[in-house]
Length: 243
Image (spheres, rainbow, N blue to C red):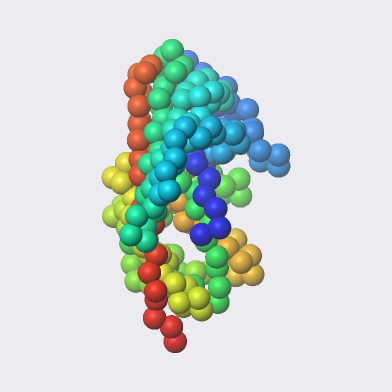
């Protein structure tokens, strides 16, 4: 893994210049150059303060999250034990009103010629040229995107959300002799697979709590002021069989 963005207070894009919640429209401006829509909240764009650490654990906090109507605090804890990394992300609503929240992790993984992904899902969301969802179909209708068995990533562009996921995935890198098992908490019941091309050298497997553009659909969690939402991810490394 070459990095991992923290997705808070939501994952992926919000269309329409914002969203309506409980009869009130909340504007949200684009936050990344070149992107037409706000994406991934602002947690990944701000510095986090190191709150505590030991030889194997660390906690970081963000106290001034602020994008669109959102005002929030967040924390993330990391723990290394027995060859595994456990990460837990928590957000607390400080907006003074009820708002819908989401969370996610955005790990980046190397992609080689023999990289294999296994991540069983029931459905896949299709996207349009704006990278917004335009319907959902059974994964069986898109065999190249069916990772119920360990499979190589498609040669074509993939930037899609998958649901009906059991929260487990495995990534094998036979060239390096390494395999990674990913386990997500029940709150993260969707994954986004971003794989631009075979020669990109990377792909992203993102456990998230809701589909793309959920502010205009469903899947977000409504928090009262002062309420929290948490989600966790575990990554475990092991030696893989090589050809």
